[in-house]
Amino acid sequence: MRIVVIVKEVADTEAVISLKDGLPDLSATAMVNNPYDEYAVEEALQQADKLGDCTVTAVMVGREKSKENLRKILAMGVGEAVLIDDEALAGADPLQIAQVLKAAIEPLEPAFVLAGRQGVDYDWGLAPLALAELLGWGHVGLIAKLEITGSAFKAETEGDDGLLTFEGSLPAVFTADKSLNEPRYPSLKGIMQAKKKPLETKTLADLGLDAAAVGGAAAGLKLINCNYPPRKEAGRVIAGETAAEKAAALVKALREEAKVI
Amino acid sequence: MTKVLIIGEHRQGELKANAGELVAAARVLGDTIRAAVLGPGASQAAAAFGAYGVDTVRVLDTDVAYSSDGFAAALAPVIAECEVNYIVLMQSFFGRDLGARLAARLGTPFINDVTALAVEDGQVVATKPLYAGKVIGKLAFTGKGPKVITLRPKNFTPAAADQAATVETKPLELPAELKCQVTHVEPKATGMIDVKEADIIVSGGRGVGGPDGFEPLRDFAQAIGAALGASRAAVDAGWIAHSHQVGQTGKVVNPQLYIACGISGAIQHLAGMQTSKVIVAINNNPDAPIFKLADYGIVDDLFQVVPELKKLMVEALAG
Image (cartoon, rainbow over all chains, first blue to last red; front, side):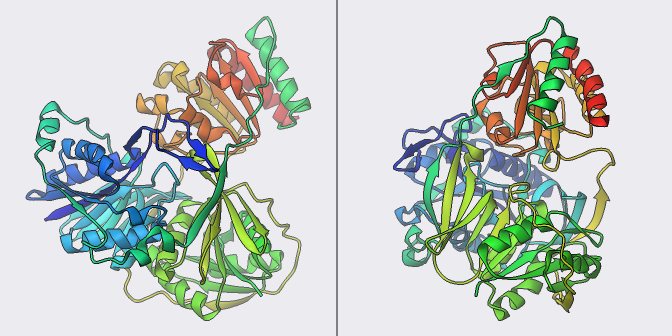
């Protein structure tokens, strides 16, 4: 049995995003594994332990230099990895990425696929869900709990009006929210072993895909430009001798100046 | 003629007020607005669209609370048949989930979490915060076919519900086989408002000192009808559940009033709350970065200030 976990790199969440000619420029930005993906990896590892005789395969769309972060995923305990690296994918939209993922993942015949709920870059959260639709599978987004029993699953997610329980049959795609688990840190042994684990690189041609169809040049979306949000001016510090005096001055200001209460 | 299909949200047949936001966005995009409502009680919810002047509503009245594959399959043929140009949903759990599935089914581009829409030189331009709002992107669709958009809540001035159109409903059909569906809904505990829906958020960070430190904040939030938020530091320390986290790996919020208590103001937290209308920071460290963003700052012990603030704000909100 196999579980596939989809991972990607994003700019470090502590990083300031540089702009060049009005577009994000990450050439000098430290890249990390998408934080939500680490919850998906942890879940894949825990489910593999429970199910037994199970290979966990990580699939990443990235570049040559992404291998360093992909090795960190292997160091957490994932058995093998596939890196899809093709320069035609620059600027590809999430639906195109889903087509690429389908071509890479379908032949692996996984029991199910896990991914993070969204990349903390463009916050799409779309590719894994679109992948499920393209494969004709069910999906549950933003899961907080997952139970696999034979070929059936039960998953819980925080919905708009309460906690939702989803049920369906495998194969399926699940996206992980932070409440799912507590991701492990790679052990020293894991880091050593990761160096020797299989990491295969594939191009679009290797996957039998046409760069003219799934490449960035054919994307259905275009980022026209980016700006920094208007900087909020620093306001004022409320003066007063005691906490009570400051609180009273604040409430007065909220009521009379800001008019929010 | 540009046709827009808005997908309404409802709670057991009661149309949610965000229908006004969907209508407002649809009016920017096109001139013919149709709606769809799906799930238990959908027929009842459909009638409420008359107040927004929407007279044709597609209805999927079913016992199934939600099925992404089923609901998308029910909608897709109608979208193709009616040659809909834009499909608009809210960026809620329901909207982002169904919107994604629908876009994939239609093979059509999707821009989610949109904060503004405009038509520039005949082209629709969608504004969307990227990197949790560290930068604001402007995006355009390329290519033909229907396009899917989800709206970030509270960014579009809701259309008034002051019309009296007679609503004609047309049924949608759920496919016989569902890959996955909701089998149980556990309603939220009463008295707990989600940070994404709240007008006022009281939020705590490392400065609250531990799980017990959240008690005065919880008490304050409940007394004034606010939601309780938290920084990543407090959540990662295990002091409070992740559902409260505001920031880049939590929820992005834009309330009228955000009261940050004992939060220093890491960039990933600021990204999640900087669009709040008014920001108050209470922190005993005068050099905390949060003060650079706050409209009003109080440099003092939050445990001294919060009880006083609670008392005075309860009075102010009552009067």
